[in-house]
Length: 133
Image (cartoon, one colour):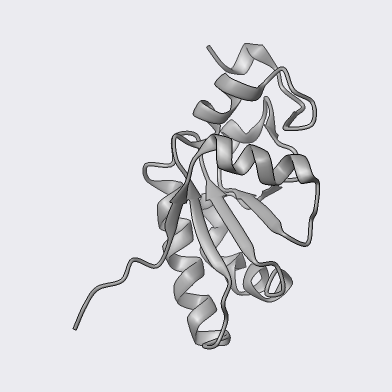
């Protein structure tokens, strides 16, 4: 029996290219930061705080089942983002065993993304430097 991870990683540049296409049918970004969501986010991201994520995950799976790529992230994507992606993936497999949806985690999280793209309004919205740096 081989272990297949329930998600893959995507880097900031790959995600930026998808977000710039501005096609909500192609990707949905799920930001699982809690209070640290204030101060900016990836354009079009939905905030589903990690502290209440498990209560809301079934609804998220149903809401975005038609979207080919789901990208999770937190501040650094070291704990909350990967954990949310794993939980989402498990629920998704239970509800939609034949789903071809890609579950991804943004490498370096929002911190890495905003360091590169915070001055680009097509990629980052509501940015407030006070919360970063």
